[in-house]
Amino acid sequence: MAAPSASLERHLNELLDTFNFERQKAADPIRFSYAWSAGPDREVVAVFSALLSYGRASLIGRAITEAVGRMGPSPAKAAQTDDVEAAKARFSGFVYRVTRGEDLARLWLGLGAVLRDHDTVGDALATWDDGAADLRGVLSALRSAIYEATPDFEYRRSFEHFFPAPERGSACKRLNMLLRWMVRGPDSIDFGDWSHLGSSRLTMPLDTHVHRIARYLGLTERRQANWLTAVEITDGLRRLDHDDPLRYDFAIAHLGISGDCPTYRRADICSGCPLNPVCQLPEQS
Image (cartoon, rainbow, N blue to C red):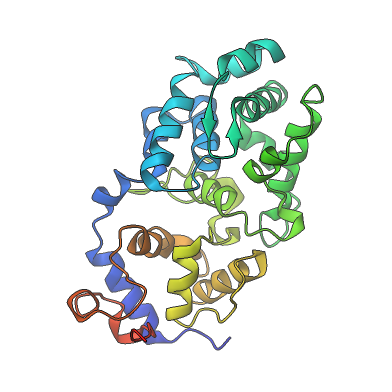
């Protein structure tokens, strides 16, 4: 792909300047983690919130509300002290699309084991950091640690969907979103609790909305929403901001989520969009 133009950077910055972050934050899954101070409790809630963020926005909110409501007042402490039966009982009856209570119980106990060994998830990630240009290895290490800590759970394909393997080429949208929440900032959206990992190493959380808008902006021509596509989009944005390539992610994603970016040109919507002059959104056929 050609390097992004100065014009694209100017219009993306205009998008940030005019975007209603507070309104969209109130509808974003990150909102659940704001109830917790920096530390292990927030980490546990953030991991659950990110991994449950698939499907319709309204249903995501219900699923996260239910999951967090089962954690009690001290999620990190409870995750470290529950045994297998207690964890399964805690999340018994939970159903959200393909995810079941057993999947949450496995994640819960896996995070508890990580916290017992490292005090915080952020400390664990720092220990596993291989110094690579991106954080895929860190995510793979977290996944491996959770699997190794929960041998009493049988294989479930739904858990593979819930907690995908970065090394297998998945875009890992939800895991990359978790990293954005915790590594970027602190600012009006993201926490910066794991800032030691470096915002410059983040990879774009690639969902259908970001993918299509990135194509409209000429950041990728790839049609498959996989890790390579996420990297290509990130690399394009890194040329605009080397230290913080994901600073545009929240606004771009919510353009799609909110419906403010349609799937074909509409004068009543597109004319007021800051990205309109550089957007390649097609006309309706």
